[in-house]
Structure formats: C-alpha cells, structure tokens
Length: 490
Image 1 (tube, helix red, strand yellow):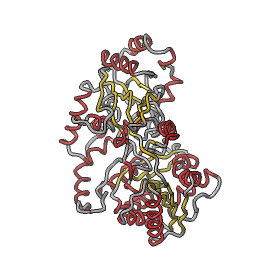
Image 2 (image 1 turned 30 degrees about the vertical axis):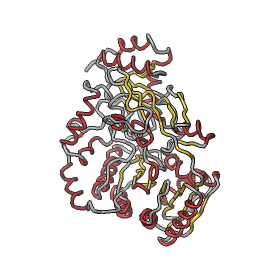
Image 3 (image 1 turned 90 degrees about the horizontal axis):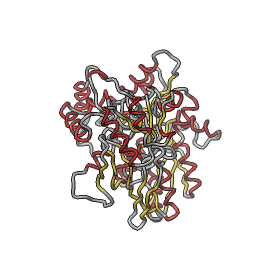
Image 4 (image 1 turned 180 degrees about the vertical axis):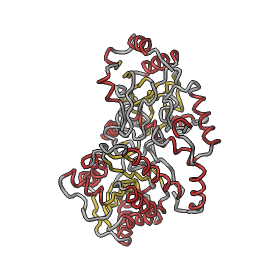
C-alpha cells in the first residue's frame, strides 16, 4: 500500500517540536535495527513525542491516513520488535523520561516510558526502596521497552518479571484514544487487560504512563561465586540448591568462553580462566536467613564439585562479582564482529542435557557458542559468534539458533523467556501453539487494533514470512521427550 508520507509529515509538524520529526536518511539510519543487528530496515519517517497528548495525536493521524506505526524505546531489544520491517512511522519514546510521581507510603512510582530501568531505583534508593526487575541492559533499556517485552533479569527467580511489578498503565490505543488499564491498587475486580498489554510487543498500543511497584531494600545481601570444572556440575548445583528449599534472589551461570571474554574485557582475572563454568548466587533477606542460606548453598556447591566458593557481603565486592555478568554481551562484542543472541527456556532439571546438546550443535554448525544465562529459572541466552563478512552466514546462524530452540521445546521449554518474539521468532511461534491458539491470540490483538496498524507483521507467523510450518513435527518430539509429572520442571 502506498502512503502519503508528505501529508502525514506536515500534519505531525503542526504540533510537534521542530526537531521531533526526523526525515533525513542519515538520521533515520540510527534506527534501522535494535539490539538484534542481523536484520536492518530503515524507517521512512520517525517522531520523538514528549507527552501522552503528543502520542495520542500521532496515532490519531496514523489512524486517519491508514499508516502503520512501530513504537521504540532505547532500541536494546533482541528480537527485532522495535524495527520498522514494513513501511511504518517509527514512534520513539526516548524523550518521555520524566518521573511523574513517587508515593513511598504506598510503595509505588509513576514514570513515563522513556525512563531508564536503573533510574527508577536511583530515584528511591536513598529512602531504602528499589525496583526489582533488572535486565542486564538496565543502565540503558527503558521501562516502556520492558513493558513491551515483559523483561526479566537477574532477580526474576525470586521477584518475578516486569508484569509482577506493574500496577497500572496509561495507554494510547492505535486509533489515538487514551485509556487506563488497572491503576494504583494491587488488585482490581476486572478483566486483566493490564496483563494482556504487558508483553504484547507494541501490537496493542503505546504505554505513556506506567505505575510501578517498589520494594523495601533487604536487610542483608550476599553473593556467592562458585567455580566448576564443567558446566554440568554448575547446572547440578542449581538443581540441588532449589531442591533444598532455598530461594536465591538470582542464580547465573557463565561458561569458560564467556569467563575469558569478560576477563579480557576487564584486563584482569576476576573469574578463574580455567574454570569450565562459574555460578553466581545472590541471597537476600534478614541477616540470619541469609547467613543460613549462604552456608547451605556453599555446602551444596562443594558437594557438586565446586573448586572454590567466594562470598561477598560488601556492596563494592558484590558489584564486582556481578560486573562481569552484566558486561557479558559487551565482552563478546569485543572479540567477535557479529553475534546472535538466542533466548530459550528449559526446566531446571534439564539444564545439563540441553547445554550438552547446544555444544554438539555448535560443533555441527561450526560456529562458536558462548553461554550465559539465568540458571535459576532456566532462561538460556546462548550467543552465536560469526563473521558478518562471510557471504550468507546469517542463514547458517539463524538455522543454528532455530535448532537450539528446538532442543528447548523438546524438553518442555519455550522459545523465549524475556526477549519476545518480534520478527526474529515469529516463524517458530506455531512450534509451541496450535492454529486455534494463534487465532485466539489474534482476536485479542484485533480487539485493540482492528486495522492492524500497531507493529505490523510482528509475533504471528504468516505463509508469506515463514512458508510451510513444521509445528506438527516439533510438537510430536515434545510429547515424546517431556514428562509432565517432572516436579522440578519449573
């Protein structure tokens, strides 16, 4: 469909600041991809609203002219969800970065979508509060993007993902109407449209004001770093820690490849270079509880083969242990000109098996894979390294990524834990869901956006974008290999 971009641009310039409308190619190139750089698509036009009213008028104009739109925050997403794949207006919320109100008596904060994740905690930490969801990109990713992808992070094992910490949303619907989903209370006697919106990847509208739940900072926090000869031992330690009834705030594993990449980035050996894997365990709560849990966790790690276990109680020491994990993706970027991050979930009890399969697949495809992941909830983030200068290498890379996701599904897992579907995984969605499931999901989307203007082409597989589905084959494999009475599955 041909759209009259000149008419839309004139209309937008009538109410937006002069520099809030971007139409020059050299400026638009900044937005041709998100954190997933393997596919690039330059938008025809972009806008930078600052208020809810701006967003409402922008979407009203799009609706009037039948022009699709794509919402974008900081652009750190890893599924292509914030990229204009089909011709559409790019709506960038990065200038909407005000903290609108803070209510510590009721433990909540209201922010615009462009507020950076780590800023929320910074705004209230002096009063002894914090915001729990903490993606690895928390110093640059925005709350609006976290809402779109239902982001997790290091502490989601104990505290849950973004949806567990959002009380209410002010949303601009695809036709420009402004509405509120839920509000400031913890429970509402209504259909949970807030829950439907979170994780919808920009296909239901744009959140312009977000009410978040704050938590009291724990009395005591300690971090353990255990190093193992191989990653299977580290995975077994994770299984036994949770089996023992301990509930760490987070558990993360890094393999040998990632350990050395991080040490090279820092210029000193924070993690033992000869370790097959390191396991980070964070414990928080009351003093006695933390000390008891730490002693038990150390005992379990040593039983499963840990060579050494370091304990850090001081803030600076804890931050140093976490620094490597938070810098993992950047470390890989220092040693490889291209990498592709996957995001699958498996039951904890299957971690050793799946990690072994990933190693085999790496050898078959002759592409190195670095592993770093949220071990506590089985959320894997294998990074496939490649040279973008090799012709057609992207095909091989994405095939390996798909093969890894097949292994996750084969043990009862999922094709995504927090990065979303976007354009990257839409062709795999029907590996998990039947046609009836997908039709039901599409009805929800149509209820919010009957004209299909919001983030077109994302999430759902189509014959044009995906060709013939192989869902039946994969589902048969899942049924064969996964036992639903596995008590340690999740």
